[in-house]
Length: 284
Image (tube, rainbow, N blue to C red):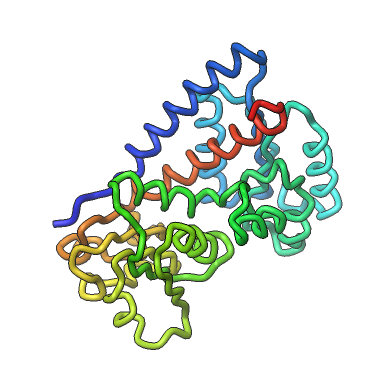
């Protein structure tokens, strides 16, 4: 049976470190990191994420702002708000919750956020820096995935890592992070031939496919590390992209859904906001 990598426990440890560092920095500066989250519309999943982000940042002692705007907000109005936040000295991190309504271009908004306040790690400057291995804000979910693997003391050097999914949010960045740690990386997608065969050769399997229970236990190499990034509501239960029951019998390590990657994403957002606070206040 697989050992579960409980993101909730890893996240709690990292949050303790952030809270402890913040106490020290508050004593020196009298300031706290400021995170502004912008949410358009009433999407229930986005509402839940934003509420959790607000709750976590306040609990850590951050200055937290949530700008809830109607779905009808124009791109021009949203860009104006982003510009205000870029120039607000109390705000060190800006996050515009995706997906945005269809009449707004995601890219235009992502590009408008100041790179030094882009705590999501989506701005082209941060993406480019990550590509060449420079210090930058790392996208929160991929960073959380790597922290979970490191938590169990697994050495990625020379291992075969397979990533299922090639999104800009998870698949591509997590592949770069694995490569940086000297893994041999294969990225799979909808056009990959013999996906089960490719997965079965993976020492480390990261699944961010967006399809509930797509990866079965017999796709998994015995003893492999399996990180399930997916989350779906199926028959009123939360399921991942990996069929948990069959995977648990084969994998060496497995992240559960819920309680796996989810808590790590918000925690790494707090980590990035803390880094931005230090950088913008010359504390590094």
